[in-house]
Amino acid sequence: MLRGEDEPALLGGRHAGGRIDTRRGGAHAHLDEHQRAVALAQDQVDLAAARPRAARDSIIALDQPQAGALQMGQRTGFAFVAQRLGRQHGHPLNASSIQQAAAEAAGAQQYPKATLYVVATPIGNLADLTLRAVHVLGLVDAVACEDTRVSGGLLRHLGLDKPLLALHEHNEAQAAQAVLARLAQGERVAYVSDAGTPAVSDPGARLVAAARAAGHRVLPLPGASSVTTALSVAGDVQGGGGFAFVGFLAAKASERQAQLRALAARPETLVLFEAPHRIEALAAALAAAMPARPVTLCRELTKQFESIETLPAEALPAWLDADAARRRGEFVLVLHGQPATAPSAAASATTERLLVALLAALPLKQAVALAAEASGAPRNALYARALALKREAPPAG
Image 1 (cartoon, rainbow, N blue to C red):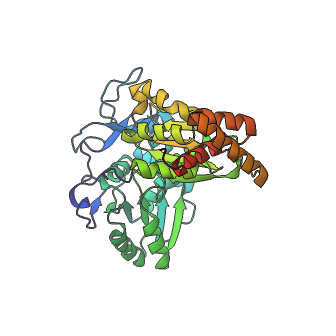
Image 2: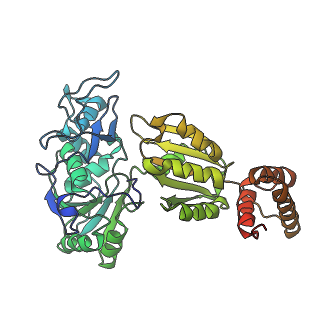
Image 3: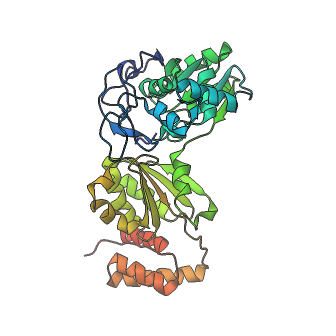
């Protein structure tokens, strides 16, 4: 799930007290105005749109107008997806049919007891849930999860009713003990985060480490990940040297700028997360730190209003300002890789002298552009060095 370190977690009821929260995934799990989930037309299920709902309603129901869409009334989003996937014996697929399809696809495999199953869930489109994940969620004895409201709704759409154990960033060490106790009794336990792959900018790592330390087996069930989804559509031809997942940068401007100065010199592809209320600040910081570096900005991945744009970092602020809608939603940014250069000491010294001379006579951006043109050195590296020289220079007068 994309959530910054300074953003409030979706905690309610017994979550906030840090105590282990065990609930059933059936009739008692419900959503309130803080839970964002609505089904969309054309086989999409958007987990980002908010609306209050009664406890008895479906977690994902399309009861609002959608341009060019069928009105679904009280039909559940997962059932709608199933219906559109095909028909069986002349009737629309339902939760039972989905479970049957999952069992046929994955049921012959081995699912040992006393095992922790780390299950990836959709990042915005419920149809991205794998059949193997559906089968395992139906097989396990309990589901540990980041938020019982989110995961309880998911289970309801699968026609499943499981004990839910709240395990999130505020109680992971304590709640892991309850999971270990179940594993010690030979139970199968799944862990899911709110969206995407657990332990990738989400809770789960401490639980996995504790389970392994206690001698229990841990099995991954791969699926949706905003990191790999964004990388797959970035078109980063310079990223052959691999990528690094950075996640959320610091909230404080000074700390964020220091992080970006360090990142600007790295040649590999970099993946960042950002929240809507901080995207403008990050765009401005990127434009200043690495203006020429290509950035692929992914907004609302897999959801109805998904947008993907690739442009130089210096163009990000203007692109966001052009339309208020572009600043809404959750963001994944791919900073494209850049060629790694290893200039000789003599060449570096010559470029440095040139840069110093230009900085004495010209504004920083113009000096960097001329130095890059004259020396052939990477503009981003020169920009980072120019910023350092400015900081190191003695005050005038």
